[in-house]
Image (cartoon, rainbow, N blue to C red; front, side, top):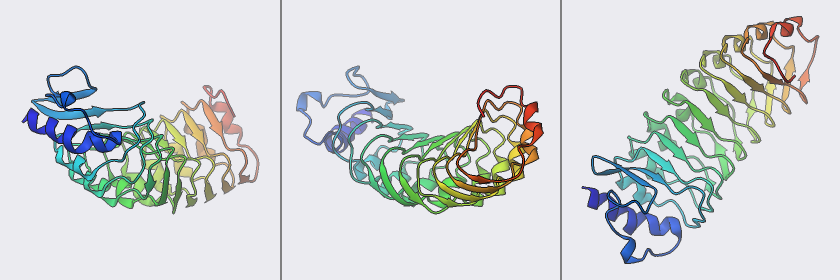
Length: 264
């Protein structure tokens, strides 16, 4: 079985990622080789780490033939093209890291079927369109990085399903609309970075439920209304950035209760 996975990788995946053919002498058993950043478990390929290289090809649909793959790390390359829809058939995937490439198109809806996914990073690419609603229902996600793309649409109420999320990084995009009250369900969230978007409406008072939050960055949006008094409950907060918005009213004196706050 290991040979099958290695043949799939070297014959139909690696050449397309690399942008050229692979010499035959490199097409060995990747599960017994230490020459590549590949990991096998029970003789099946479970991790591909080709990050920080000069890969200039594309992500081929044949990636879906690696049905035991858990970690796909292709970040910091020069990959172009789209994320193939077929990636949604790899139900074992736990992390997809493709940030800092030249990928285009939209995020395939099929990613929303990867119920074991814990980390999704597609930041610093050239993606457009809306973020599939199904992604906000992947309850195992602990980190999501979507920043520095041209995403539109809004943050839907379904985000409240991400109760295991620790990092929410959706900044420097074109998303708009208000922050849904369901954001208060993300009780394990530590970092919320939603700055430099087109968000409007008030800061929901439910944000006070995020008692593990260390960083709240909403600067450079169109957020209006007053700063909710419930912010006093964020006793672990270290950084609070709300500048360049349309907030009104006084700064709640309760902010003085945030003893760990370092930057305001």
